[in-house]
Image (cartoon, rainbow, N blue to C red; front, side, top):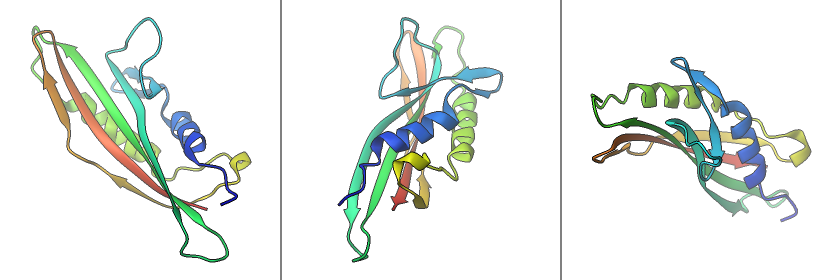
Amino acid sequence: MNKALPDKWVRKAVYAVLNNIVVDTFTIPCYDSRVSGSVIPAHFILMTTQTNQVQKANKCEFSYESSILIDVITSYQSNGNTGDRLLADNIMDSVRNLTNNLVLDVSSGLTVINQTQDFPNDIVTITQNENIFRKLMRLELTIN
């Protein structure tokens, strides 16, 4: 297959639409795989697992079935916290809306033909010190 692997182009497009979005007065940064920097924000987005599968259904041009897992994380100190997932819900709704028609950089030579958003189970982690709420979205793309 003579096409570039779409990973970096998908991350670039996702980052461009999601980094520093404002939801409920909070600015939500986006990171690649893990949080970087000296200060870890309480609320952020991670671009995590990516997959690619070459599809050979068309003899003239192969395509990629590509996916990326987007992880919305909100955390609160446990003392006095009621355990509300509303901010995580609102961030994910913004993520869903902003990635609904993702476009890859023209210099990639790749085009998104079809996309699907899938929302696996939420993950809630309660410790003695903090409450962490995670919402996941798997963005699946058919790319030529």
